[in-house]
Amino acid sequence: MTPLGTFLSSTLDFFKDNLVYINAMVIGVLLHISTVILFESSEGHKFNLRKLLVIVLGIIIAYFL
Image (cartoon, rainbow, N blue to C red; front, side):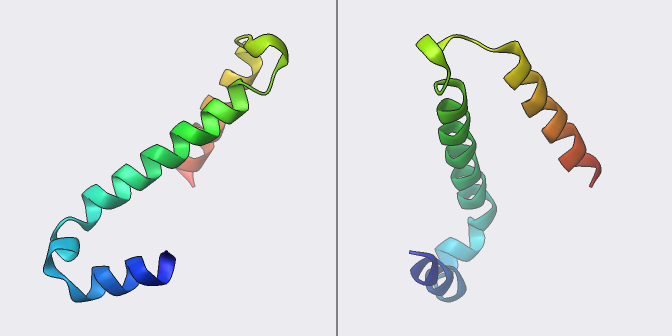
C-alpha cells in the first residue's frame, strides 16, 4: 500500500491538495489502535495510571525533540 499511496499522492491533484488531512487521519488511526492495544493488554482490561503517565511523558518528549 505504501508504494501505491506514494504514487497516488505524487500524481493526482486530489491527494496533493488533501495530503495533510489524509496524514492526520492515518496518524489518528495508528494512535487509536496502539493505545487500545496498550491499555487492553493488562489483566481484566483495567485502567492503569502508570501506562497513561508513560504515554503523556512520551508525547511531551516527542514534542520537544
